Length: 350
Length: 220
Image (cartoon, rainbow over all chains, first blue to last red; front, side, top):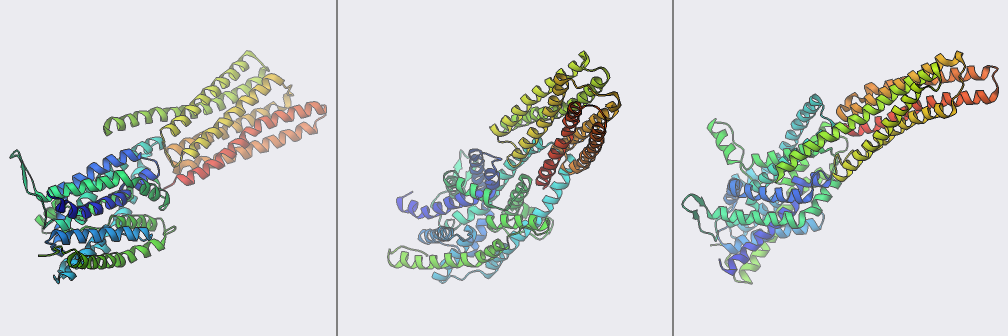
């Protein structure tokens, strides 16, 4: 791979790194923040399962992003990922809630506008619809899980110390599942734009297994996410764990599970095939925002407890994020593409 | 790498659970030994059997101190139950203070050897029984705090009930003592022992009040 290719990929790796630094907190934040799990344990589990999820089931959600805008030149892909990463960085700096998913979708639409490629309205409306459904679904799943778990725990009457040990184990398992789902669902955000212009070649490992160029790309993205988790997520985790709504460790487990189930539902090709085989309505495979899934789940538990202590300001900022993030990313991408093409003379589309 | 650690967490958990249970057992046994010791003292004075009960409460107290220190050390060293270990620590220390009160009261009987007139024996015995019942209910409430937090209030109201009963007996007894024609120094000495026993019920009620707050915090 030449230097230029590596340079172009770097924006995707930057986006992956910031996703790892921020979104790993959704998976392990409450567990690490409340000191139920050590950061080192969380970081190792999170990294391994994010990479597994990205490589093994990342293609479904990435495919939908590809349909939104098939960015066919490496330069264009670089700028889309860079615009998304920059928006995430700028909005985080400004203290606004931000989602890499919404940023990359905005950036892709920005590329479409710049290159006068038509944006598929069906795909766009599916994606936008999912963003609204995602937190609502997370809230409903969290409510059901919370009810079920409370009932189960009342039945079992575990000793406080034993419940603590079981909760730790459950948080580790839920975190692993969450990291896998995060990798599967969100790798599309990080590497999806590079798929049509992937610089990798398909490999055959001793004629036994195929390692496709997309899988290689996703492995690289997964490694970038893992790097973000290991180098930078501890601070975010401690902030999330200490600053979020007061949740018991069991409540924290419910939130992580609801988040992970939602991300998994929107990423699983296996589930889609299963639903199809029974002629049932399928769930669209779309990258969704893990932060919004978490907020939805926390709200669900809040509503179940009678709505006290819900911070409606957060609900407001989440709604604002849906609008502002894609707009900022789209704008940055559009302007960036202009400079990349006209000032630096790079090919941004074919 | 994760599996053996998880398994060892469950093993440590069982040991710690056992230690907390043993701590509760010790407090309940001290209450029973105390009741028996008062009964023996009223019947035979400071006899060998009384000294044996005192020694038993002494042993239970020092064993409980060791247990409490061990439990607290484990909770903090292994960062177990991070959200409620402060409450658990407070509960164990408060329960331990009830145990200390039992021991202190029996030492008082042993050292000062009060001469209690026959007509007050029944009330002293009754006072010791109410106090014991209050502590037994407190132990049940504390066990429920660890296993079934919803049940804490079922035992709490008994602690309050027996504390009130103990207060009634102690007031009646003190009034009778001061209305009698024994000399003032003896009256004061007898009152001191009424309060020494009654204070244990008061202390139990204080601990129960704290426990009620811990229980509210633990509901999820």
